[in-house]
Image (tube, rainbow, N blue to C red; front, side, top):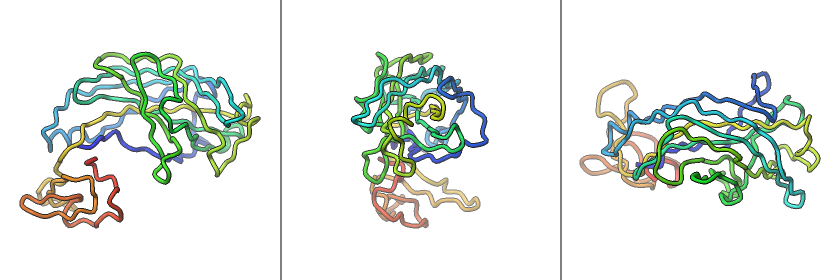
Length: 254
């Protein structure tokens, strides 16, 4: 089954009028997602250990070194969540992304991060993978932070550093002075608990007669335009559904 660490690229939520306790300070995000684990575990033979990651928290958000030559600024923070795990098959992770405002919180924009994982700093025992834009893959919209080896328990990371490419957002060009301004520029680091499920063939649809149901189809290829055929039906998208407009459309397989 596909790496279902969900792609959350290009979040554009507006934060004006929404309460937050983080202005270069702590933010706590007690958000939990149900990643269709029950569905996928039921419809596949993938081993699914108990996944109870919870109470994710970001704290001590600060800015650090600025490189005006490359238009980058380090954003440092601490990150923790309970019941983290990694085994030989799959693992959980935190999807971390950054929002910024250059007008004291009136309007907010998505911060583009370095697309190179090695530019970011993770404490020992953890690694990150960068989620990039679909258009060019050159802009990082967030990072997946996860254990780098087998383990379980509370994940507690101090001194995480992400590199913000502040000149990358063409909708809101940030100057050197704006990026480092301690009052008008506000930065919020967001974190959402995620889980990876190994890629492979899976079944979409129940085969039942409920309203608006999919015709049960095995998704057995990453090519999303492959027409379902055979018995049982297998292809790149559920039978009787609209064909995706490109082969790389994320169909859940790979």
